[in-house]
Image (tube, rainbow, N blue to C red; front, side, top):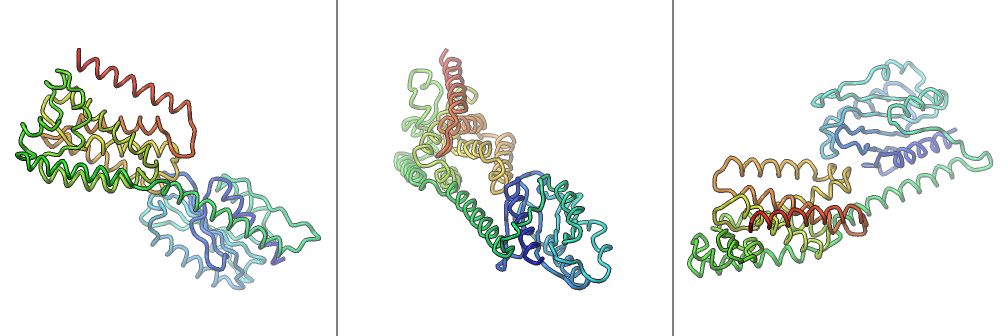
Length: 390
């Protein structure tokens, strides 16, 4: 019977991990497994425990430990979790009264509508508890006993190896997604913009309008006169040291992330395209002289947003809300503080998103999506140039 319940435990872990849940924690003894649903807004956490308690006091103590552990957890997207399901898989229930311990869910402080459900699954109540657990998780759960001639302990060990192997494979796949490329062009662009800042300072000052215009800042009258390259060169120029410092730091952190996600050549295309879109939007909506890599940097935000459309669950589990919050804060800052070229920021954001859609992500093919992004980008560029030069 012990081996049979071991088989049930690993069958539950395997079916949940294949049914929209991911393993986030496993004890060294592999008798406790935590899983999290892929629903990023209100994720469900499941704790599966293979344990046998002779007395209800041991069950109560473990339930108290679980409640305290959940309250202290950080970093599993739990701040939005609405439900935790604590499941004990046992051969036999405690010999004394225990039903009152699991009769009602425990409220979780600090989480809106958060509750901790406890289910005790043993050899005598599988027909009642398994359907209830299936309903709570949205995953079809059933027990398939091992073949009579087989050893249940061997069957459980085989299931365990399969689960652990699949868990490690998924973790490795996620790691590779975030480490596809090396940040070569990020460092190159940082060197270029620092070098150009020194050139500006040497030539008369990076805040001197004549110097900025001479070296390629966005200046509408000259663009209208045919100097189209001024839609590209402004991303390498900065007005003052603070402007250079903030954009260099942003490029360093965002650039490394995006270049590792997309690879160097895709990153180059995204960054330059976003810079062009930012300069074009600034040309259309901001008559004043401007320069800076902000449009291209906002394009990196756009590339991260596009990543979120492909890997939505992974995006929101790792960086999603931080990226969205930074975009909103920066756009609001641009609206409230005078002198900031918000048109260039928004143009870069759109350009980066579309450029990422054109090149897509490594080892992925989405020709329809890519063609659509290319068509929209071409249409926007054509419309912008027509409006700007007519």
